[in-house]
Image (cartoon, rainbow, N blue to C red; front, side):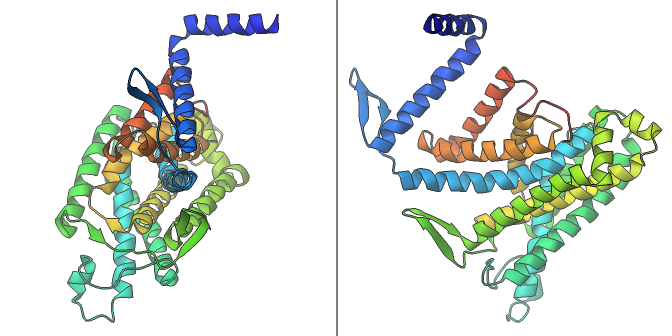
Length: 371
């Protein structure tokens, strides 16, 4: 009787929700294909390979580690974007370029300071031409200094932008703010391109490698990204749950008018939202450059698509959703290399976004909620 009911439930689900059935079928195929690849076998049908191939456990683990690291940084950046949406009620398209601003501010400070003793003109050091690249183990103090500058410098930039652009338009509606954020994004991006040119520069290199197990190693720069991201996410959690500011932010996200009536200083909360979101955006940009070793004027704009995907998958407006969505999108983007060419892995990340929107439109953490 139990088996019959299970079959009946499955048939009813397939009829009522064909999208869920299709997703389940694809997932089962991918799991079966991954299993046969790990076993080193291949399955053919009518002369065509339908699944299988060759994939080592070490390669799979290495991809998962890379995806986790990128996902943590994306989730860190997504927190600021999600906070902006939940409290200010608009999608900030300048957030990706804010990430770029933080990366450049931090790395200019760290790189110039590290190479002052080198016989290279200061203007060349400012543009990352010549000099010694940094690593988290060999130059930890300078890397930490750059991280602090990235956070504080980005906070200053977002506060200025809010005062000059967003604050005067706050009562104009979220569509006007969204359009204004696109203008801010273009202004920031091409200001960086004007100052630093459009070239891609190398600023960081691995100083040490830690062998986790056969075929899988993690560099000192990646360890720094992992530790800082986890610590900052834990800090955000404690801020939201244990402080008056966190409670005020959650109250504004739930009902701004009621929060204002109860005496919460809403303008101060908005300002602190920009401070926290800007600091996290600048930090995430700085850490991503530390992990990749290179920096370019448009990497934040390219990253913005992944940040939006992470925030929507997690539940737009949810801080914890941004964290979880970032990790999920990072893992999908990395593990998609098993089946797709490197240039098409972003398509897999957005496929996951579409699937989540089909099955759970409010996202993993259920919609607009700061906590």
